[in-house]
Image (cartoon, rainbow, N blue to C red; front, side, top):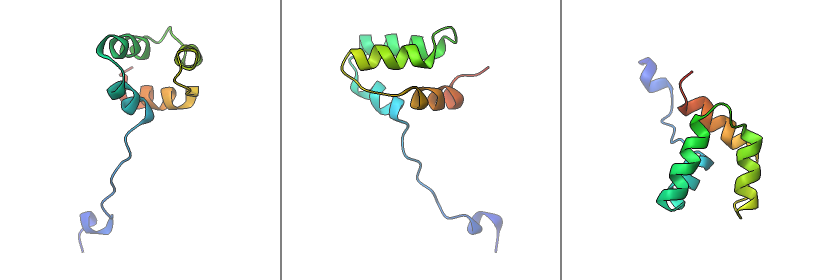
Length: 72
């Protein structure tokens, strides 16, 4: 049995931020992408802005998105 056969195929769930980006209008999605890629904008600040705008989210999904998508 090969190593590839030992691991069941796993379908990753899309990240909450990716789902949100797909749902936003293009201008808002671009604004959010800018915030996400700017390390000077904290995850808490982004979460607060999104929540105030009617999209409740905690900082954790933002941190997870950054870990997977922003090169350091």
